[in-house]
Length: 281
Image (cartoon, rainbow, N blue to C red; front, side, top):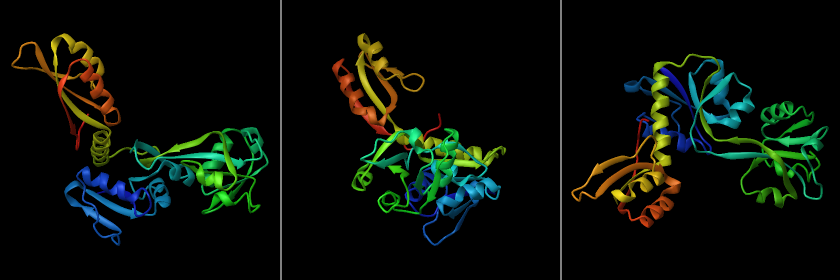
């Protein structure tokens, strides 16, 4: 059976489990369960600490896993990303005291506190910058004030926590992270894993898109199709009124209202939006 690791807790766990459920896989209903066998689909799911998943996958003990891109890189495991999942997004940045105007060249020789030493060390090595990494498990933003470090490298959302600690962001992002499906580097993808990837990709796509249906006069069809080109081409069907047609296309969920406004402005009517629960593209 295909063996797949799933986060057992943390910000990735619930969405990862829900994604697999929507993809048609059996998942645990009791948080104390460590292994679930989905015999019908030929998959065993192992519920592990998110930080450990890349290690198990990289060692070849498990064929695939869901974890954060940041955790995979930080682990240094022989694992590679095969599918991004569009949730659990985070941004890693450098930050230093507000009274100093740090630049990337100023990092050399400094103490950098982080909960992701492997990730930060690799990033600095890529930039040919040498610094001392101070590993902390939490409250990284307090390290400068307490004299443990000169700078920090941490996850940033709004930046409020850093500002409250007297720090400000500088330099380009270290990493844009999100949940990903990983497998062992250089390994051949099994047919069961290929199926899982297609199923999960269908769920991810379905969450990003909606199905848009509308009626429009043929005179404005070209303009309408420019607004809703779809993934390959919109579907166009004749209506009882010979001068009108019905159009169906997939559009990005985040752009739905803007697209509807544009269609209405050119005379489209009967505009309907439908959720997509699964797809194969």
